[in-house]
Length: 190
Image: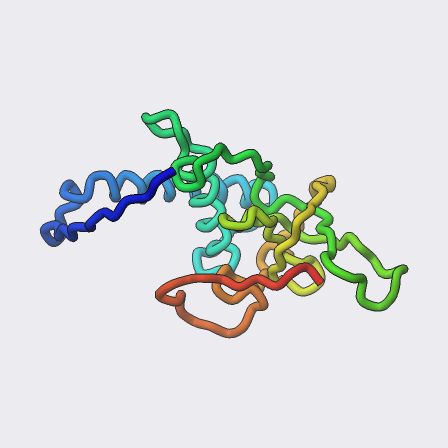
């Protein structure tokens, strides 16, 4: 595949004219619809309301955009993922906030008899590495892992509301605002 230099031309739309940004506005509405679907599904399963200010909401938005990019087939017969990577997405998606056992990566800390699989909740996939992102049951922080196994559902509202990590601060560090460029650095599963 040959790459060629392409010049970008910036265009500015009139203030408060949503029709001038039709394609962008449609994309935003689509992501909002997917997020709404994820939220309603989770609230139904958990029996609790998901607050927009909750760290969980940030994971919902990220998962919705990732699912759209990897699964929505456009008019040209390809997904955004396929246009970017040159191949179809072959991974697996789980329902948002599915209870899982995630595999601890690397050498087992504490000896050979240490646990290799730990409980958590699936919140999405990393776009570039296809690693699963899991919220750890023990402390509500996020880790990335290469293997998950879905387990029977037993969602507790307390756990849904107790999440700490966000896409931009996976270990739950105090941060009041969303950073300008959210480039999360998730730790490997311990």
